[in-house]
Image 1 (tube, rainbow, N blue to C red):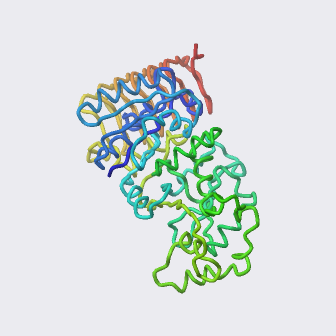
Image 2 (cartoon, rainbow, N blue to C red; image 1 turned 90 degrees about the vertical axis):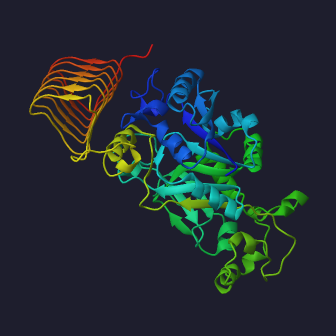
Image 3 (spheres, rainbow, N blue to C red; image 1 turned 180 degrees about the horizontal axis):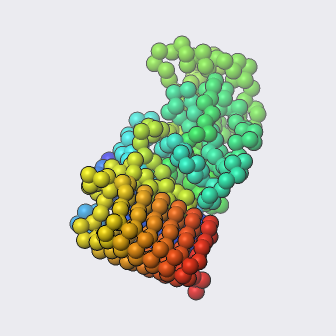
Amino acid sequence: MDFQVVVLAGGFSKTLVPLVSKEVPKALLPVANRPVLSYVLELLEQNNLKDLIVVVESESAALLIGGWISSAYVDRLHVEVAAVPEEIGTAGALRAIDHHLTASDILVVSGDLVCDVPPGVVAATHRRHDAVVTAMLCSNPVSGSTESGSSGVKDKAKKRYNIIGLDPTKQFLLHVAAGVEVEKDVRVQKSILRAVGQMDIRADLMDAHMYAFKRSVLQEVLNKKEAFQSLRRDVLPYLVRSQLRSELLLNGVQSEENGNDKDASQNPKIVLSQLLANASTPSFHELHALGPNGFSLSPRKTHKCCVYIASNSNYCVRLNTIQAFSDINRDVIGDASHLSGYSFSAQNNIIDPSAVLGSKTTVGPQCMLGEGSQMGDKCSVKKSVIGRHCRIGSNVKIVNSIVMNHVTIGDGCSIQGSVVCSNVQLLERVVLKDCQVGAGFVVTAGSEHKGESLAKKEK
């Protein structure tokens, strides 16, 4: 595929504090003891896409990520790491590397995507329809971590969804509204409805942040719309809204969007009946180029916004919240273990040969214990990931948690539903439930914490 591949790796994401720190940008957060970015890079490598631009927010994050890539993928991938300013958004990041984009089509992938959908299917859909954009959609995660960016929100009324309108063949994107409350009215352009006759409205799909773009159109939009910051919230909705704009616009005649296109509105069913009657089923873009009587008028310029909908059997989740971080770690050593790259034992877990377990210590199924880690006597680990070179005392219980590298845990501690970052010290008898402990923090002996975020003050 002669697609140019851009991986948007982000930087020090504020929504993931205290998991991210000056030493650990988002792309290097561990999923089953591997940086999350490795999942996208290996997916691309498996699909023979080895020439990549990885875009990172901030010079310091770019140095950390670039250093890791050059050591982990030496002789495997050709990666150019491009640093861009912080908080300019996904569209801003592409605008900043505009001069690097030279191929006719660009494949853009989020660096926090953990999925098993081959990028080639998105590229093939894009080429087949000669689309200006093709977006991959997948089912919303079961845990309900929508794209609101907040974690652990219990109030369902505040959940925000993507409202997506598809044509009856589910190939074309007719309407997209990112991050709306489902209770609100959905407004849809009349021109789109007239052209297609009917629309399938969905609130159960997530934008997976894998897009194929026609480069010339993408660059034109980014240059013309300097205020656009987000691909999902700005660029994609704009391209979808402008699909059926007439070529007459170029001649100074107002478009149908301004209400001056009366002819098609006289018989809104004509297009749908043509769709049903025509065995070859032309797309609504082709039908829209015809007049109300089915005869070609002055040609109308349309462009196509397409979708590839991943199967429910595919795994496809973005690590964009603390909840998603926990969910993905659990999944990759559980139901989605094919993504981990590890061989599981007969007990359905991964215990590094160099790890040491005390007597009467049990590590259950769907668990991972990293290289050089040691556990004392009578410990219990269930559905958890423990990193490398950890020192864990006796009578410690760890359930549904992620413990990163070089963590020291004292005797009698209990950790449930929590994330413990690297170089943390938990002194004796600490109880954590649903907490996040930032890198290098020391938790005092005998203390109990529930639903807290414990972290050093960043200097």
